[in-house]
Amino acid sequence: MDEIKAEELSALIQVIHEKTGLNFANEKEKFLKKKVVEALDTLGFRTASDLLESTNSDVAFVYQLVNIFTRESHEMFSPVGQWLSLKEDLLEMAGRKKKLRVWHVGCSAGEELFTLNIILEELGIRPSFKFLVTDMNEEALIRSASGRYKTEDIQQYQNRFTRYDNQGDLKKYFHLEGSIACMNPNLLQNVRFRKHNFIFEQMNEQFDLILCREGMDYLDQVEQRKILKKFHKNLLSKGLFVSNFSEARPLIPDSSLYVPKNPESGIFYKN
Image 1 (cartoon, rainbow, N blue to C red):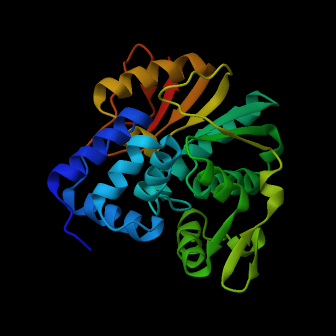
Image 2 (tube, one colour):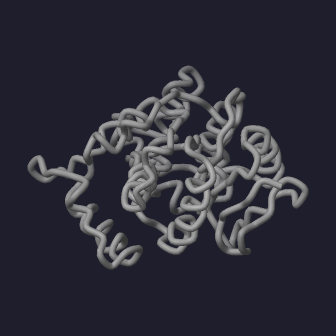
Image 3 (cartoon, rainbow, N blue to C red):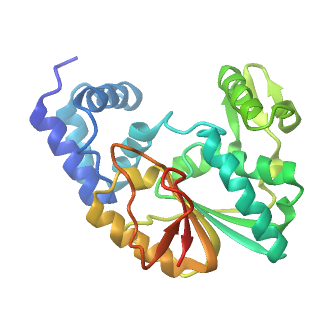
């Protein structure tokens, strides 16, 4: 395999940014090269130049690359502290409204989707919540809907679930097929899936809760502010926005639009 040149890496990142709106320019070079090598192996290419040629001619291929670049960055019940903090808000929302709508932006392989539905089930309020789950990548939607995970990953998720609730038992929510854990499809009874690019496309629906965690990490501050304004319009009164918390790249919404629950929660109330 030929060495990945800095200019090839830069050109790939630029094409991804132009065609999807996601910006990987702030990621470490070591991480990016690792992901390009993974893409070469997965997609059957020999050189980064071959990858670049395909990205210039095929938008669907660019989204395949994005899926590889973001793979394995989602885990169930992570971070535990944020899910514990969110539990209070979920109970408050269900106490005030019988029907609540959630927009989950960027579903990856469904880890966060199943986490939230398991929490809602444990709290006894899942029937009150209806989900719209979107991703700019068709493959991510398929993977999320399938709810299939390696058993070694499930063990890690169980450990984290126990930190969330020391009585929590993930076995209630999946069955085994060989070395694969298949999540209970009943957890997705309240879910619609839809292909959608939250950066370039408008969303003409309103929600009580918007969950967009990793997607915000790949936007610069100017782009983040634009997206936060869009999300603000999509939130109903007393709506909640949930994102990642990162000390390196903190999300700082306009105080006229959002009020943070606390500085490190990644949870924001619509102002």
